[in-house]
Length: 334
Length: 262
Image (cartoon, rainbow over all chains, first blue to last red; front, side, top):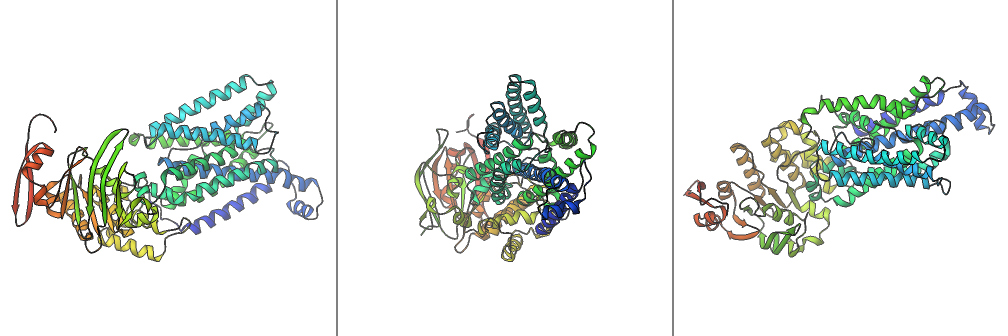
């Protein structure tokens, strides 16, 4: 059961290389076969051709967005699990993703997205923040898995109800369909604009989360011990919450709901980093990016006339995994 | 100058008074015991002395400086706090748990270095936990886990260790082991405060005792001054047999006085 802990730098470099390889793979396949060499050559000489357009305007933003969203979800999952000291915490399960989705839906609904580039991710952030704060108020100091899951059910229910309300009064069936499809979660047909919108909020969130790594390690011995080790628990907890809200809010507002990445990824990575929350963070971000790229590749290769949504496939794989985790820990759940 | 000196400490939680007018001090080289019935405020006093909570009134000075003015990092280097029933929430290796004691010396981006490793090894040596350095802490027995948590504190090389019921739920072997380690620590410039329920252990290992009851300091002083039959009857509500021999003092509770806890 215990895997030999691998040197952090070695592990991260190896994962980074895997990420680059997967990125290259994803860029080289798609609905249309293109000559990659020609595409690169054309772009280098500023010739706008079909090949260069497909590579740089269609495939690259899609792949980048998949990697960024995957990294965010992996990192946020690892951060929430460390903060709540509970391996079942995940942005989707505890309702953070739905909170962000609600924020984004409201922006769509009222057509506010056009005001400024930051309106959409900011709304996602606010929704996510509201959800994480609710989780914290409901769960508090309790480490009980049951409390956490119930709090998640409640917050998801509220978020879902309000989203349903917005859909109910949608301006037209088309608007409703658009929101519904968006909610399913996807990185298809995205441009660099989405990358630009999300990236600043993601970077901010990642920075805040990574800064708290040492604090998460100390939390392994409980909050009082962390405080006695010199950590300002209140401030750092708030910083983690803000970090999760900012990055997940941005990810959801450009890609919709993509579930279970934040649950599965830290779970797979944890044994390789000796269960250390701090080392789990960066590695989970890298593995999250790889996983979502591969999931998106699967979506593209499976697709017939209607493309399968990315969020659908992550849920199809992730939900049984969640079930398995619950079955495995059923006897120890409190 | 006292290592740690608290005067006139008042403290409440949720409007319920927990501590009232407590004076406390500990000198270098001392092992001081905090005793008293459940709910007397021992753990709260220990948290205040550690600086992770602040009193409503009164002053706590560490080496002459106000505890509140010392930076959290500096405080963490000087004071080590062993929480009651300390445990790890993730299945860390023993060595990794002990390594957490080096946090007060590390910058946030830094990994542990050779100096840290040396201190970790020394701490495990002191607590005799080297044998299971690669074991998973959550699979160890309660006694072994307590020793590991103590090793974590030793890795920080604190001047003062404050331990909350470190021997509760341990077998006699481990009880003696933990107390011996704390006794060893309390020499030269270093000292330790320990919350205890076992009055015989308190009598045997501590230099001085503080007896708390209902948030007030009932009495303090040497073992002989504090552990009298009259004090124990008044505060704990039990008759007891106190035996003094050259092997030490032992206190055996005999029967309850009256129906209710005093």
